[in-house]
Image 1 (cartoon, rainbow, N blue to C red):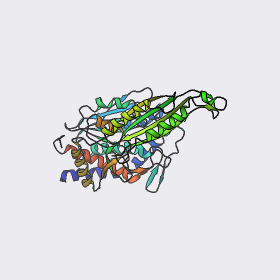
Image 2: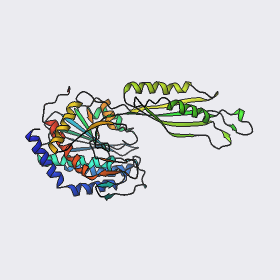
Image 3: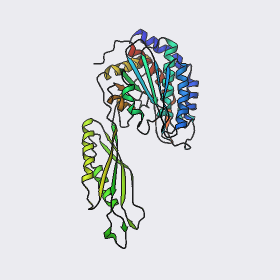
Image 4: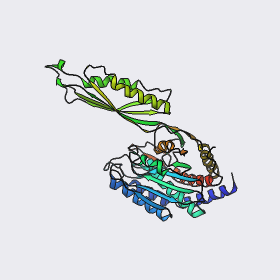
Length: 392
């Protein structure tokens, strides 16, 4: 560990520690703004608070307008050349407007909708940048993207990522860490597929023989899809929603299932794509037709060349901060999947530590809010301390 890195880490820590109360207050303010992905006004309200903070830090902020979702935020600050680091986060949450249950602190934990997924990450990033501004020059060139539509799979922003990632050497995603604090280096790819079966309606008592039972065919198809899972390979298939028919006394002429499919690598992704497409040609109930739609919206996140340099920088930063870090995989997905697909070495889970995300028990370990702000800032210092070597 260099003396310069240790000294900057100590200065960053002092800056953050002196602002713990205001960090927690900002977290409460953001959590109490309901920002369901489909609530454009709520997401934009969070974005307005965050944009004001970024502008106060001297970053050039642009709003990237959306119609169906809130606007994305893009901010940039020049540093001393390479490397250029992209910080990624999201402004939206999964909780429909009106179902929020407020913010509260209970001992070492803070609770509330989106407190760890990922408003804690937003606060940590803002104060990491503030600490760097206050303690010396910005060590790297920084680009910040806070999108508005991550929770439903980034349907709009994922198409912007290739352009926004152009010229970027590394990316750090501010999603929550795993519950044990692990920084994420691998994520499963995620696909959403819809199986739609069409049959023919008939009276279930008077002339059932005239019917073609779509529900029965769908049951076969869901079981066939489930059989495609491979636990050893990490491949899962979940029929999260099944519906069909109208009333008990009518043979169903329509049925549908929505599948969540997760894979660790590109080979499994290709296998599942082929196998699910083949279901459309494998009906068991004569007279039914099957349509398979959908696909993978997040490819698997894997470690790219350059990721070891990124890991080494975070490890050096952690040592300078007196923290311990671990790295590992996650079964969940994030924008990091798409960053890796765009060719950017990425670490994820750089945000707060907590658990029970997407539930009314969602919590953040409050100490991690401060620790991750310090770690993020010091990691940027470590990245800027050595010549860029993207082959390592």
